[in-house]
Length: 359
Image (cartoon, rainbow, N blue to C red; front, side):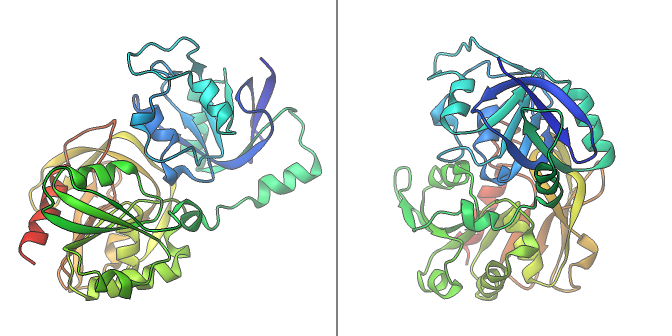
């Protein structure tokens, strides 16, 4: 295998061997603590523009299983693992992870100390990194590493045309899902509850959604800085003003808060993994949740009388959900559709269904 290097903006250099495609990758280095579900991780559009580090040491043991993908392909910029399994074993396996990375044009590295790398990111914060063939950067590479930012992420990952997903069995309700970089399992959770789901691009005007006379509106997850999406935020505000039942997940949650006058901020290293504890404020019950986000809603900025923080992160106290009092809407920062991941909060889809039944 070819020798390659990960060089961080901090100057730290890690030597490893190449996996996936050949070439060079620059991105924002983040880590996920998920012990399972690497296929869902690499196909999650929310990782657009990022180099993802898996803290679990052995990755690729079940190979490639297309049925478990969260989107049609890989959107992350680079992939880092301790050890890549060369001999996967699973009755559903359709190939090796290394081959899939190569087919998708994803540049990766294995054989580095991912524990040490994770500690650097955790202690110093998310930073840019470059996977390259030389431990010495050229002036052009240094400039690229310093100036790299994630822009236009939602527009790049959203679908380009609307499409319809039929309900499983009898159609009971119709839902508009606005795609900001949506995970496929959101569709699956709605479909299996009898919803016909019409998926709309992020560029869709609110008036078109409202005119469709849907029973409810789902706002998906997605990548990037939520505050960058000025057009999308305004459309969300109009949809919430319409009194339609609205349920937002992850980026959808953030856009809803911004549309109502709250603020968001970037976290030091984000929440990414399948073991994040979130407490429901009204009940005091704690749920284990799957999360993937680098920004959070500042719960203290939610305008009085418009809503309140419904979930908080037990580890750091950040806002993990909002119940709105002036709109028929609620949102969560974590992923109730998680797969693989904890199933504790899938009941939130049933709450959404209940709101559509009484609207």
